[in-house]
Length: 89
Image 1 (cartoon, rainbow, N blue to C red):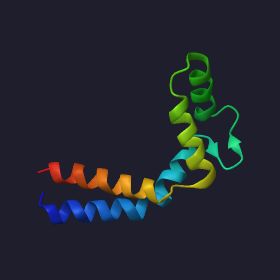
Image 2: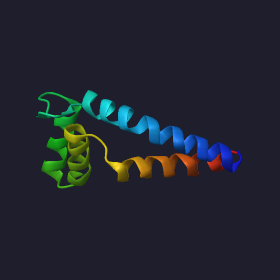
Image 3: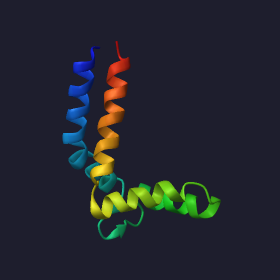
């Protein structure tokens, strides 16, 4: 894949990320009102709280579920997509 295609993929990720990521995060139970009872998010929170592993990931997912994805997240998603696209020759 040429650099132009990787940049195009990165641009598409930047455009799609603010819509797709919060929708997926919300679908698994990280909502604007908190973690939904009985959801995958509730299970993740329970496991993370019990084991002490993964609280950072749960916190980030809850933040995205509550407030959406910020500019740093958009840039990170776009950059990651561009790198992956570049190496898909």
